[in-house]
Image 1 (cartoon, rainbow, N blue to C red):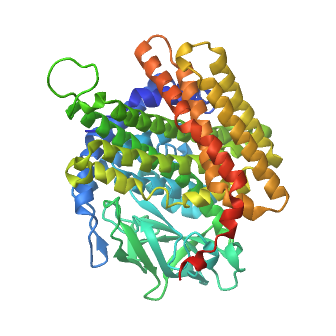
Image 2 (image 1 turned 90 degrees about the horizontal axis):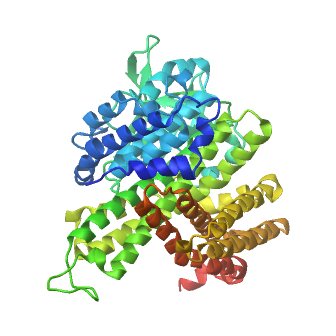
Image 3 (image 1 turned 60 degrees about the vertical axis):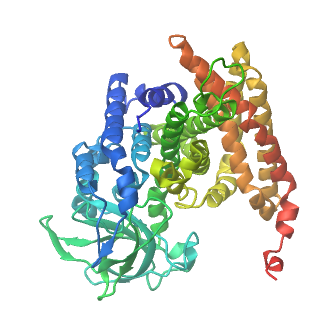
Length: 593
């Protein structure tokens, strides 16, 4: 049974990831620790008591489609209405839009717990939150007046429609089309696939944000526009009108997240779906990226949420399951497998990966908050670049860790993990989508290397490295013997990261783009591992003496991570700077005969 780790979440927010920076600032000065704790406790209660019990039910039931209508799992409609009654949908939405205006950091923490409860449930409201931001920032006043309040409250839900059968990550190939009407609206035609919550019975209306091309649009991504297309048209008095020409033509049968309907959506079978332009014509991708960037962090948090749930299940099972004995134990009888050294290693590896994912995701949310609240132009630029740097790392490393942790959890359960009875196989099935959607982790690596490293001429990443080295020095100067050689291993990993960064920037400057791309994935892994090691050590440094046992365990986590996962940074560096020749010379077609 899932129990929200509220104390660890609060500690990470306050002492590792900089929530105090926001509490001491102007916009969130009223956000005291008591309010933070109250929000976290209630979010955790809702996740554990309301969402988590339905996770397995949803996995078994799925989302059947009949007569173009999708039925969500038993209890989900009531669960969703409990969600919106609690005001959770508008947690970080602006107060002007009817939301609570709270920091993204708190939204990230709550989202972790909801994803631990059920990843398949949490993804639906997450997309609605993204739609709120896109509409609030880019839509006309008339569209905001019609749609924003009901999306913020959760009365209606939103979707994101990008992918087409021939256009996955490459939106240059997008074919959905839009035609202008005389009244200022547009007619939308085309097919979209893999649309999460494209059809369901949780709300009376669904607001689709759809990418499409106008007839005279420029080629490529410069000719994509964004349109708001509701399932039901909305009358002038706000009531629902006629059904729009958009429907669900199919629901995918997936490896995991069975409770989340993944739909094929068809627009314009009966004359064209009515849509409204968001932003400017041919500039829709910029508007959609407002939604996509936050969605990428949200997907990283999905990896974190599943990892935490898998950790808890594996820990409980390892303490309960008795098997064999351990050296030095006296007396007869078997011991809980949690006491076997190899299982300890596995449990510790699960826990360190989960905490690293938590700290990186919350740090990314912190950077977004700082960018949103900064008034000084230099500070706004700094934090915007930091958010840009951390987003691909948070998305990719956290989702990779989610899969790794869920897989280790299955292993700890042994044969019982491979059957569905224990529920831990579901964690692995659910987690596996997260490295794929919202931009595959390979695309995140390309984004990091090609777009984020060159920010400010490479000065931002170099400044980031300087900050990390300062924390490593604090570990060294703490003179705490329980850290072992953690500080030295942090220093080495940061040396590896700096050398790899210099190589990446030089390769781009010299026009060796293919070489840089061949090392993008190991580079992201290296950067994430090194950053995670520093954040774990920071958590151990910030642990107070009031709870010596917890302080000891956090230090053990930092030391273990430094001894195990940080060893990989040296080989990753060698992979980056030394393997491009063999990768680029490899001919996939030669292997098909």
